[in-house]
Length: 485
Image (cartoon, rainbow, N blue to C red):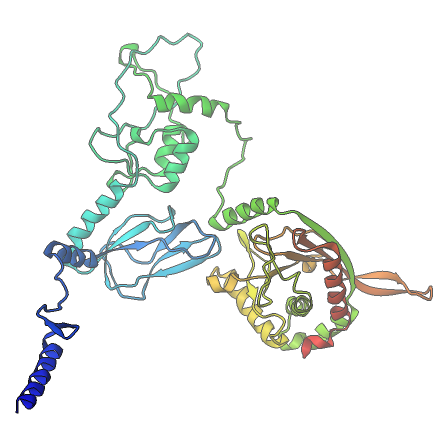
């Protein structure tokens, strides 16, 4: 009976442990209830508040993007937006892309206006969950704007002006009005900061004309004297004030600048043009060499005439031939990314250069050695259309392992291409033209030939590697039936 009662007690004990969360250790019941420790009340409140006011950030639309330019806001301040709805169009270094919101809410404040630039990850707008949160959202916007610059300084004290000589040149344009000496920080757009640094202008001495006193590029240009220059005025000596130190520093720089010829103008790079320039400069650090090859294209031209009506382009034919050749010579499809090792790519992805208004981009034909010719032609047509509309997604122009640049359609007979960053080689294709060719028996005939020049990274690809690759490519082009298999 005692044994039965003991078993019943153990069963009850186990039941209590399971239901109440007691800890059991080495057969001893420890009367300590396991419950999660409550969060401090102030922490819970802060989390809830932050969830109701959110920031819309400048996204990274490509692996090389460091900043983006606001092309247009699809929504205005005070408008309601839904999750997944496009709110802004951003110009990256590759394309113009719609940026969607991940939450429902109201656009409380736009921090970066149209035409302005912001670094990746920076807040470009504030989103409030409801109308009740608009006031908190605007406070957060003001706080973010206030932390975007350097500390403000008091206006410079006036100094007595020295008498000017009789033949003195007109005085430089006066600096922009000084900002009031209130505690806080200078609010300036990224472009304004760049201009201020370039022209040695003190942002603390400029009263911004943008929202919340934000200093705009126009304000900096005016302070540096590179905007529209007002007509010089002569003030009485007693009332004249010496220019601020920043203005005095900017004056010699402006004087030293070489004036533009009459009718000339300066146009800043777009984001895409800036990315191209940076990549071209970076590739100068790679030791490259070039190898040329002459390829007879009579058979390829005949094949093109047969399949052109089915939507096949010459670019697709060349990309397919390159893909098949690369599959047989993986070293040419490789890259050197750290300066001390070979990086062999698992797939053959041919990037093809496309000229577009205001830039250059290289959409990628993935698995060019395995994709059939007709499917590849359809993919290429779609990529070109998206490129012309500046609607390519990052997956459309990233991942290339070899680049093809074709200027043959413009009548260019030969040219050299610059090696893209992160790849081992690039092929430059000239036009196919009728050429007088001598046969082995001494006879002469006319054949269509094109010049191929390949630029390669000499750290991993040697002359013999490239020569063998070009021989394979030439054999495929001169016997192109395998391209349709």
